[in-house]
Image 1 (tube, rainbow, N blue to C red):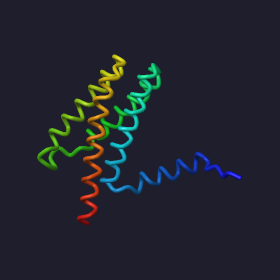
Image 2: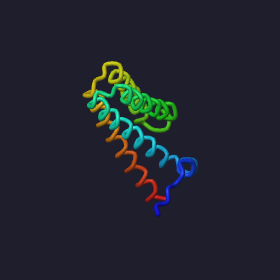
Image 3: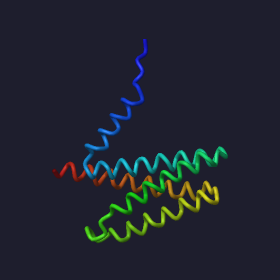
Image 4: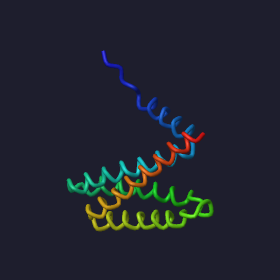
Length: 130
């Protein structure tokens, strides 16, 4: 007999994970989700499923807007450059979506993966220092 977890239990678990996450962990979670969205968009664009690609790219755009809007540009020296990168990534996602250009999506995905890895490493270093 297989026990299925109801979707509302999964949603409750995810909600609790997000609401109890440290700021560092939340940043990593957002970057990882943006990367997932972009991977899915690449897959959808490659398959010619433009509606699915559009949906994934819109969600990735929402995430980069959240990352940009919560970035404290006065907190550290590289923050303005990171803000510019977030702005550029957003523009490239819009371009990838409107032109249905999988190569642009792949390029942004590569940057998103690097960002996720960088923030993951920074979070680990912060946790180790605590």
